[in-house]
Amino acid sequence: MSDMITFDKVDKRFGQTVVLDQFDFRVARGEKVAIIGPSGSGKSTLLRIIMALQDIDEGKVSLDGRPLWDAAGGKHRIKPTRKHLRDMRSLVGMVFQNFNLFPNLTALGNVAAAPRHVLGLSQVEAEARATALLAQVGLSDKLQNYPATLSGGQQQRVAIARAMALEPKIMLFDEATSALDPERVGEVLEVMRALAHERDLTIVVVTHQIGVARAIADRICFMEGGRILEDGTPQQILNEPRNERTRAFLRAVH
Ligand code: ADP
Ligand code: MG
Image 1 (cartoon, rainbow, N blue to C red):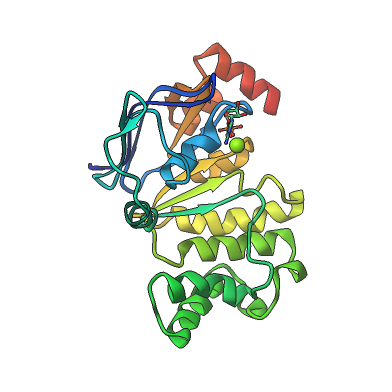
Image 2: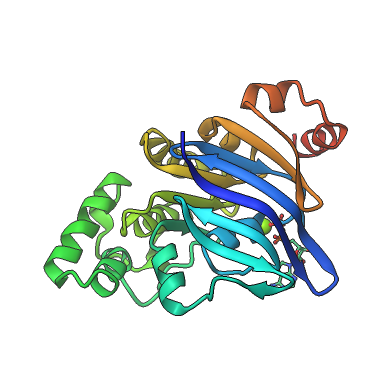
């Protein structure tokens, strides 16, 4: 099966801090992967590199067989032009911990914005697409609500609909359920689970909520110190972790 995401010996540094260290990572088309690991281990940086929000210092990153980053000696061998980054970003939808909705737009406006302005659909077409996506996340009755009038779980479902609006091949979730009240986690997880059933959609979920990883992932990677220390099925990683660092992390989060 062809890879949807490929990291080849990637280094990423912030000043003296090494965030990714000769990082190798592959996600097959349609695979659902969860990344767990302690705070500061580079998980958000990894997602931000895939979303083309952050560059790399060394190595190569490809999405869907197309080169995104290629750097050597701190120099970019692929120019990160606005066009290149925009083209690559169109493959990816991302959902953040803190929803990041446009506060001055309704739920419908939030989801319709990219189809309208990036794809150039008419207002009517963009709103039709947004209405269908908001129905999929169970928010048909909230189309005209502004984010401030929605619960955290509802805002996050709008954010998921918005991330899906350009029909990405890859969906990234960075602690998407971590800021929610416990009783609101289920409604967002249910939407994520429905996406996980889409065979062709590739999903990478970063979470410290083990239940979320278990619900979504076919494979779990434990990351620490800029590397993946252990990689396996949810059953293997969560029930029979081999690496002492994985065991220590799981004890700490349980
Ligand atoms: P995680 O998501 O696993 O908690 P991050 O990827 O956010 O980890 O951060 C990894 C390391 O990189 C941390 O030490 C963090 O302080 C540092 N870092 C992240 N983003 C930046 C940035 N924009 N500038 C400087 N340091 C950063
Ligand atoms: Mg993070």
